[in-house]
Length: 211
Image 1 (tube, rainbow, N blue to C red):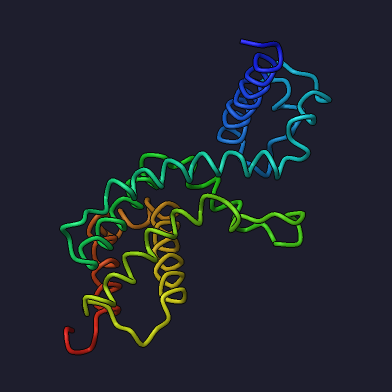
Image 2 (cartoon, rainbow, N blue to C red):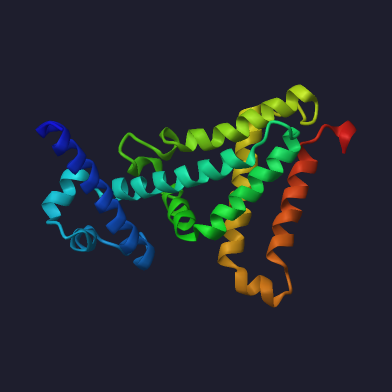
């Protein structure tokens, strides 16, 4: 291995080490309360070195979100099967999303915090220009397949339908995450609540003749 290749490998490893350190700090303290000084200390680097890799806390926050999206994308990919109908695959994607939010709660919360950042604060790059496009692509392709096979209504454009399903499901997952104690006090089963949400969504996107 040449000197340049070794330096590049070391640079990639240091970047990963910084993200690892940031995850520990962000997940423990919360993104809004964490500081770059704390990340540098956790990574055992000077603050100047840290800024060579990440120009701001927002950029570092974004890098953690990309990790989360890759995990989500893998779960979605495994959930979609060729032999299933579009509606069945949508249900599987919804269940995979619930699995992600439950098993990777820190990533889910961190990603939702990033989505709340205004576009003006993102310095010419946004969450939409990331592997989130791949995640949303699963939804888009399934919806298009459903329209072609006649199991999903065609009167709503696919991009609109895709974002409606995504935003509504994300909202329910955030609600479940924030209100677990209250829901349990009211004897609400969290799994049943989510399945009822999925049923309402799937019924709403079927052609009228299939309802």
